[in-house]
Image (cartoon, rainbow, N blue to C red; front, side):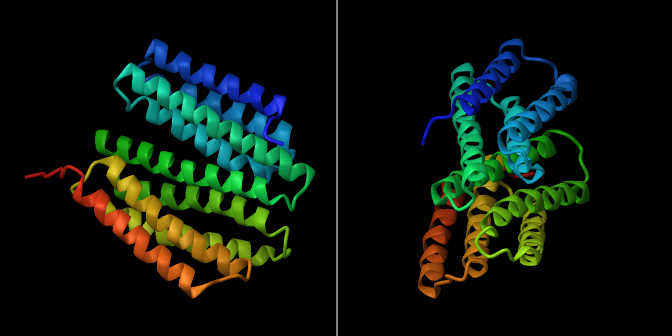
Length: 251
């Protein structure tokens, strides 16, 4: 099943909200009120569909990040394209939640959540770094926020995977390791002379490597060959991203 009317309806509201924000171009001060509204909406939508608190973390953080990042996009055409993609990912996350509520072992639904997770990681880091570069936010505050957010969304995905093994204590451990590792990497990349999109891409690549390593260990199908191939491929991808990006030098 690839269509669910309730998920589509909520994604349509989400799209309308982002279009509303893009059209009126509110001052950044009003972002806090907009984020409060989108928090209530994303929580309500995920609870109505999933009916469990654990399903709310990814939709809420994704909707937060989409709203903030929308403020950092200048061209109207790019804003509309971004809204379209964000709405599709939001729909995918709600559809995956619905299918998991019906059948917790739905492998396709788990992959939908995984796609939503990766999109959330990228949008969150892009929006957070964008705010950091434009406002005077202490680095330690940024790192703590990174750690908390990565823990919550990683916990949601691994908890879903835990339906197979009921190994919930390991969910906490693996989520904490992922969050701590990415927070340390994020602290290191704060001092890199690159824009927020390049930095977010690098962190997403490393997050995927660690996430894949964690889930394959967690689900007992770890492959050394798979890990080495991923490491080589994504290291080359990260190098290409760094070489093709503009350097932001400060004197």
